[in-house]
Structures are given as C-alpha cells and as structure tokens.
Picture 1 (cartoon, rainbow, N blue to C red):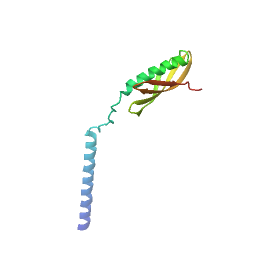
Picture 2: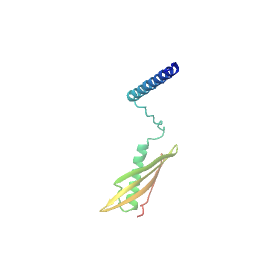
Picture 3: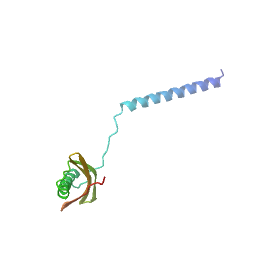
Picture 4: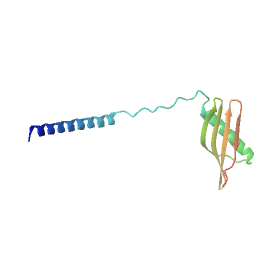
Length: 126
C-alpha cells in the first residue's frame, strides 16, 4: 500500500467515525429531549364561548319545541362557533330528536349578542 492509499483509508475511517458518533449523539438526544411545548393562541377578551354555546343551545331547543310541537333536541352536535364582530357570535349545530324509532336531525343557527339571542331551526330533509 502506498502512502497516499493509507492516508485516504485513514481519512475515510476518520470521517466514518465522526459521522457515526454524531449520529449516535443525535439519536440519544432525540430520545431524552422533552417533547416540544404546544402553544395555543391567546383567548379572545370576548365572553366565554362555552357560556354562549350553552345559551344558544337552550334557545335552539326552546325554538325547536315551539315550532315542531314538542320535539326535543336530546343530543346536540356543535358544528361551529365564530365571532362575527366583537359583540356578535354565530353558533351552528345540530339537534337530534328521537321520536319512537324515528330520528330527526334539526340543524340550527344561533346569533348571540349581549342584547339578544335568536335561533333558526329547520329539519333536515331525508
């Protein structure tokens, strides 16, 4: 073996050892590193959406019972809550009524403000 070949072989072995060491260190740090923190966007300074949702569902159930002769919205599935303006919220969802063996889904939309709450409820067609 010539001197040039020995130097090349030593250089390759050295680079291999450095890469192997760096790979092992990265694997060890990945195992012991704590999971990244999850950051959530700050809450709006508006009224609590859960309280607004509860009030809207109550009004939607009342409207459902009045419009559809006592139909009860036994279960609620929320499909969306968003602030339209700083004082006006829109809540959308579905009330499900069980009448004997028949199940009817009533989509609703509720608008909530500090002054008033209104809800529109309509049965979903078959």
